[in-house]
Amino acid sequence: MQITRLTVLLAAGPVLVASVALAATEAVAVPASCASMGGAADDGVCRIAVTDAAYQMDIRYPLDYPDEQAIADYVNQARAGFVTLAQTPGSLNLPYEMDVTAESFRSRQTQSVVLTLFQNVGSAHPTTWYKSFTYDTAGGSPVSFDQLFAPGTQPLKTIFPMVAERLEQQTGLAGAVSTGDGMDPAHYQNFAITDDSLIFFFGRAEMLPSYAGESSVALPRDALPPLQV
Image 1 (cartoon, rainbow, N blue to C red):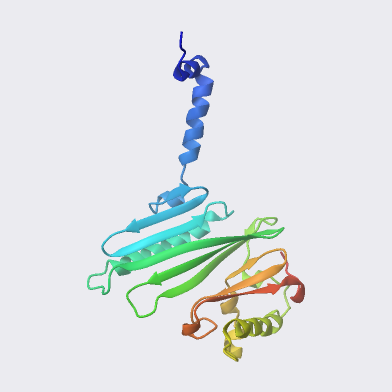
Image 2: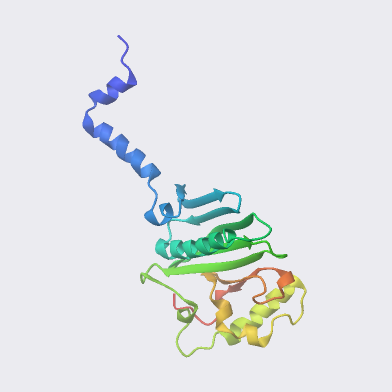
């Protein structure tokens, strides 16, 4: 007599059947923050893909960041603004385009995610910028640039010359970074941390002329004032 696989499963009782059902549910579970934007979870990544007459959108970000809601909130804000602009009556040069990708970094004490956001909204030059998130996994809290170094230190006196030198090496543009920009903490808010490096990310026209595009600079940690994380 041939015994089918289904018969074997049923004979095993409700525990096995329930386990199979639970595994299937977990495999397709999507965090509410991702699902609320129409996204789907794929191998630990939230993927939001939309194409219509007004715009094309492809957004991807990791779901394993400790403060995933912070990433989702930022993505949702950027997405909503883009969609509103694309759907505004009289918008020209449609369809618009928005792409968001992410890169993850880790150190012994931190986890960082850096979003690269690209938008083409019908102007002559598309825009690319960065948004970073860093979390102190030991302390259980987000980390901002102001919290990287001990109070009373002046890290930009060390960081700015190194950044300027590396950007000049990358682009061949001598003296392109002004002292005003280079010493402004607002330009260093997007960063990632590894065990060996502190990496800064600069959007188009943030530190360099617009035609030079976006850039990033990795500085060795042993050449900087000690980080607090």
